[in-house]
Length: 328
Ligand code: SF4
Image (cartoon, rainbow, N blue to C red; front, side):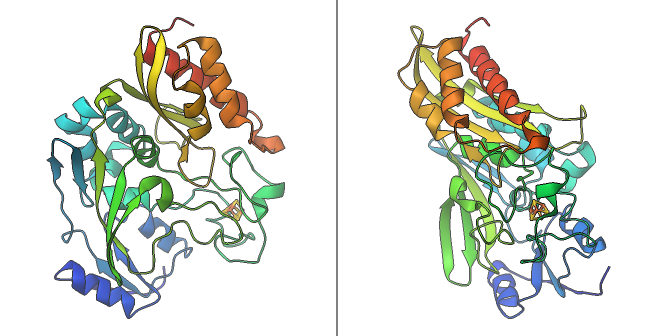
């Protein structure tokens, strides 16, 4: 690990100023991903500004929304009674990620900003456009099992690893930040980027912009929601494909739906094409298949990850069927 300076900022304004003056600095919260990457020398900040005590570690329930402080741990979020009752998909997604020990330390803000687990990104001996722009993408001709089938580019086919972010994308969450240019609110679906020609940029955040909280708007039918994750091990593994869904059905018709996919793209993938097919349609296995096919029509799999397309289709149909009470 390279030497670095450590600083405890007294307040958010001081932390933002500290990063504004130091282009190679980074924020430290739980550190569960950043410190690993520093040990590998994939990340080499010269200054860490500790923000763990600066943002809220509370979950505030309001009638129209729930505000989750950026310092709320993954364990606290998953166990919170309001989250479990109003947004079971979010609690389930958080519990599907990492291990108990990591969830006790990892924060809500940090979870959203964790970096891809593409093995080439973590290996300094292999070309990787995300780690070192312009060097090439080793995954394109290499190991592709964990990689993207939607929204990828020639430059990068990495996937975003967060389970929590997939549920938050389905729930229309909004990320609140403080940065050098003041506060802003970013819809979660716009926080993460597709790789394009700049895969080194994971999000739209500016250097020094700090996530302070996440708002989840009230959605009555989110009580009927679910997160399902397919992975190579029963625990402590990232998603091959995951599905976050909430469904409102009446008289055999889908009145409204929220659907997002994980493990398939460089960002949590809100399945807007499928949602458009589903709204107002009959709640049936055939209809769910049509919706899944509409979403996956744009998939561009590689030989090593072709299996993700039928896997995603089957998982979408399965989760929607369960939430709608439709026998398969
Ligand atoms: Fe790097 Fe992205 Fe290619 Fe992985 S997929 S090697 S992260 S450029």
